[in-house]
Length: 132
Length: 411
Ligand SMILES: Cc1cc2nc3c(=O)[nH]c(=O)nc-3n(C[C@H](O)[C@H](O)[C@H](O)COP(=O)(O)OP(=O)(O)OC[C@H]3O[C@@H](n4cnc5c(N)ncnc54)[C@H](O)[C@@H]3O)c2cc1C
Ligand code: FES
Image (cartoon, rainbow over all chains, first blue to last red; front, side, top):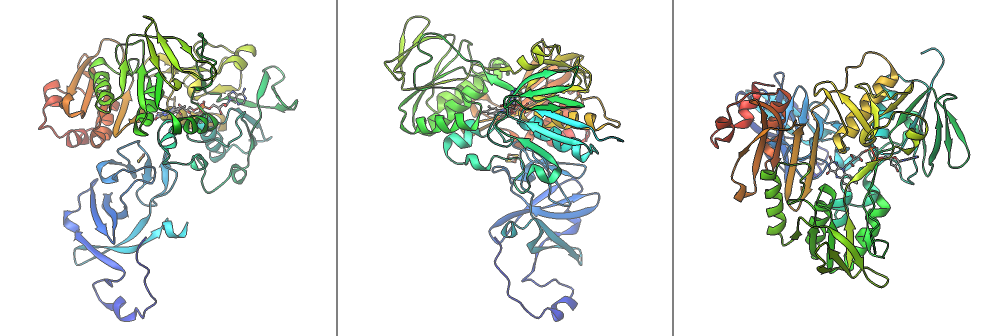
């Protein structure tokens, strides 16, 4: 789904404060991400979202794996994201489908916070549909 | 557990699937056998009347276990296997192939089957019922060439099939005895909106009437209403409700009354025999009455509950907020709760917009709620129902009220 990244020498980039823009994208200021809320954003033709639970910010794919629904229109309770359409549940940390009807887990992306800004990895770190 | 026990689960639907996994994952270390008369492993029936008929979902990917099979969890799945008798004294199940299964724990997850009509002509070719993958595949094939489809029964299955057939371009007549579709499930102020949505899409509603007879030589060619008027059709789908599959339990002397009677722990009248899902008529301690629910969410949740009870250990009584959804055309309907009679129904939103939320209030307390094309509000509304919130009806109706925000207090 995300453009494939070539092998590169990363050492210099890793030392920099700002994550490598080939691997991470800037999303929004951390201070605007409220507890229990979801924030959609676009990344390379995909719709992702941020969700904050117990202070921690998570980035996940934003479209339900059951049929088509924008998950940020749903709800978060404890660490479950509930789909607005048929109430599938996804674990906000692992992306696992914890409540049917969805059976396919949600891709999870890495989150880095640098200088008060939220960055999200371009490729999923869990449940990458390209690796299924 | 000292000596390993043997769990036998009858039926291969969602209830069975959920119970088997929950028993295993909650420490049941004995054998688990699922016996189902279907040839498929447990699968999701809900797309059968929708995406499958519309051709957007393949029947091959309806399984609940996409990446693993049941063997991985040590669950033995016997497909194509009908249970033909149960003896609760010797704790044995006789199977259609002559084998017997010995059990320590037995779960009835035998679900429900469509009620068949047997008036004149109902045996003609072109008359369909819908419950299983083979039913859906046959119906889908017939829909391809169908010009005029008569759907008898405007409950959920009938209404969904009508919407799918219409979306495929057929002329559709949706007939029911009741004055509105979904009359059993929704308040008339809400079901009338569903009726309007069907009419918006060109479905012909024939209400307050019944189809007395079907006529045709080999295949069905017309239906006849109770006033004698004919309606031309080349395909008939009957969706007049389901009945719980209780014969086996009844013959075994287990208490049956509109389903297999259970308590709030899925226990039937026989020791170590349980029932859950569409087949069970269970005691809901929160509602103070027995209910039988024919919906997906309950099958999953109650199956899971049964599995946990069977695995032993501390389990809360089963007392969920009932939930279901239905999709018809581009309309999403969701329902939370189980209202008692004499509720006031408050409508939020303009029926003309086909996007409303209905709140069922009893003495001011929220008992149930329905969203029609308002999925964004649904989880919030569900939370209000779970909390039995008392909110001024004017606040609920006020378009300025942000229901999502309002519900946070109840999180
Ligand atoms: C077309 C369709 C669309 C639906 N859409 C929705 C929806 O949109 N939303 C919603 O909430 N719900 C929906 N439902 C309802 C939902 O699918 C059911 O509530 C659910 O399937 C119930 O699961 P269950 O396991 O209890 O029973 P079932 O699914 O009926 O499974 C019972 C199983 O037991 C087997 N069996 C019965 N007797 C025996 C025997 N003697 N030996 C061996 N096996 C036996 C049956 O063949 C079957 O495999 C829909 C149902 C259908 C048919
Ligand atoms: S689209 Fe999310 S549960 Fe169906």
